[in-house]
Length: 582
Image 1 (cartoon, rainbow, N blue to C red):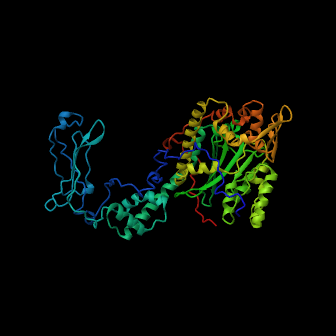
Image 2 (cartoon, rainbow, N blue to C red):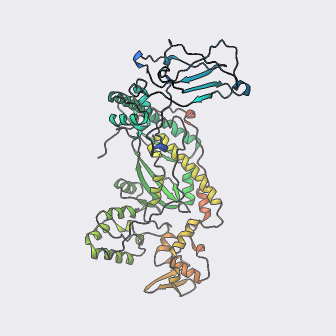
Image 3 (cartoon, rainbow, N blue to C red):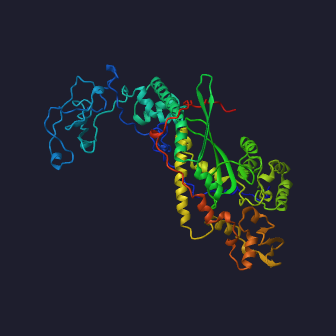
């Protein structure tokens, strides 16, 4: 198909202000199941912290590690009259006398006493006669700061590590270290855990211990996940309390044992609804994306376009005078017909082109603005490959070609790039449990509203900058078009054999691009400049700074942490039942 215009990709319109979402939610409850996203590209997990062992834990003599580097905690007798102040220069010069611990007390039974005179020392537990290891740490308790201050540190070992004795690495401790890893990868094999432990801790652990550790971690994950879904009603109530007027809908299913199972939740804040109604064009982008963590499900987003051609979330409460853009997902197509029967439906040309390239090469004439140009391009494809022509015509060209778009919506986009960009921004949030994911998205949108409002206040023009850039892109070949006046507002604009009629009073051009985008095309710009006017003055009010500021006039209000949520009287729902996809 050498005669067909060939290119690699469909130009996708994206929002450059969409930035990578970071870990914004610091709630202790919401983050107890979140994997360490920041370390995902590097190490599998962080080096573990020292585990605190309860007093009621009884270990056998075999559990005590011999010839292993470990810390011995010693406490000075409470009867001493000496008072220590960590902030005093004079006290820092005192020579502390550290007492030796009682060898009859097991290491797991030792507890530091946080008194006024407390000094701790940690030394290497290797045989001093054999290795004479100099490693030691000496610290004192600081009453004012309520922490220990290291007085002396010798961070060198001369002893030999014993990697065969792993009694300290019990199944429970190992399970806690692999908790985040198993959230990301629930099907992690025990042999893989052995390799990770050997690489990270330089210890050899048996397969059976890894199996017990995995069972311990999975039971902990399932228990915490149940606690997460049990707070869905509480979270919804907090959103309504903090953002009155918002739409929060939670759906659960009733089980035979009188319990409930979570099904879905719908959230649309009042600030977003009001902003879309007063400042956004009537174009909605629908897209779905799957959760990537232990929590299974799918996230459906509805994206609108503000005056600066950026992203805004909205409420779906009608279909008349609205255009919906989505991919070729059959569920979205059928749902759109059922919920918005009067809406104009558009298909994302990028997805159509991606499927087209799997079988054929060439170009789908999605950006043809008049039917004659579309038919000419399709005829070229038909002459070379009739099957390619039939493939494209079967996809309903009226839903993906500009030539068949109606006017008045001020949107000429043939792809759903805005929704795709939003899903890419929240990709880290989709790896987290339900409430943590929703909180991350809420925080991102709340900060985005503030940042975009601050940005709009800096503009010194009445038209949004993105619209000006798009108009300049339309008029790239402006110097090649010649204007022939027919009246005060009617003109004929020619370039060789191509000729188009422009009417400035009706804001129309026979190329149809001005009517679809509501931004002057190259022919309209030539006519406007001929009358010694500014083409920017003919851009639709949908792209004005006033509309933009109205969109972000309201704020998404702050929400209290999980420790302040009011408990709902409704039964606590269980996690959804995992089902195998067909």
